Image 1 (tube, rainbow, N blue to C red):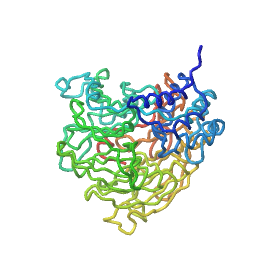
Image 2 (cartoon, helix red, strand yellow):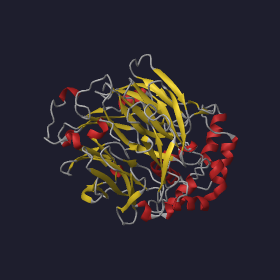
Image 3 (spheres, helix red, strand yellow):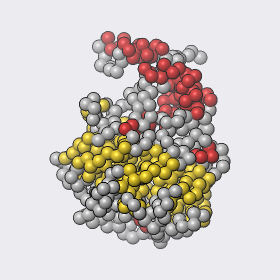
Image 4 (cartoon, helix red, strand yellow):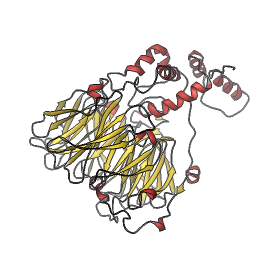
Length: 549
């Protein structure tokens, strides 16, 4: 069989350009970089491209320009060479990159190391017309039930991301039984529902959920349906995406794209795409950014707006959805690279991590201005966040870090405790870097994971510290099975239980994880939910509707 080297393709593209065909993206420097890259067949290139999208693009970008992760363009990767890149992919780094030796084989690691030395392919755009073509309605809105059809306590349901199989598991928080596995987009990242909003009323908030897959597939779920009909509609709004949010009045839903870099506003009832807005633009350093991805999106509890994080721009965009024809967007400069965040207990201040700047950014959603920037440690990552009361500092918020084993806590009550507002209150040293922390108003403790540590024992353990003493009171190893990790927490409706995920980092089409449920007061195990596929994030209906953090 003839061996085709992909390095000839840019040369052909350049020749075609000379002949007058409108192709762009290749320069003499690009051609030189391609000529130096290690050989790959077309089949190898396509396989590695898929691997990169699934495991690497979230941190390093589709165009490999870097964000939470480093720039992986050929100008940097060619200097390291295949052998050095293999070691980095295999063992990870101290900066928060996971080891991948338990996910990829040696052959696959070699393939990926060679791929990141090639010129990155540029994906296509996605117009509104194509999104509309990809809308699929499974249950028409006029056929939605007027009351729950299953007789279960749906307000204590947990919606659990099953990463490997592109599904959401619906778990009954009362019985601990799986109600349904609902097909969604690939590797779901986030799901949101209608939440309590000042001055707006929505019937039965928490009934409808909107799920965003990393493949840009947005799925609408109706918790009142029988398990076989809970998926009522789906539509693709991007090729690579992360977040979604619902308007306070329940009329609209918004989805943010990593690629193309844009956000899309849809009719929440029908899932019909209405409006596309590009987030390409000039960043806080005055540089134009083509790949300005949309990270976090949240409804603002005190105004008819969404907060949209333009990650690479270092800007929060406050988008007013009260008049879509004359869309008003306020751009709020802060720091790079904006990733994920959460509100303070009042719902006024949004606290979001700027990974590359080692800062927590605070935006006032009422004045639509930057409130503060708090210096924290390396690569903050609060996930859905945590708020609680501290005896000395008053109301506080906290974050874990991708780059260091530490939880940083700051004051977030400018009205009642102005001297402590937006200042670091204290830090808790942990065994390793993590991704999520969580608490509950009725709990005495804060839980956090350490899944970014390369040591399996640390990666498989979670830690708990006391709000009162500020000290770690317990380290709990959730599993000792090779290749498994502990990640993410959620409390049940009344705050008496903590649900933690155990999942295999290697993709599997068979059940390969479970949820371990702990007593929130004694910290002892109570029960397990088995039969899950790589369970990651978990979202309790009541807590999310009522902004419980």
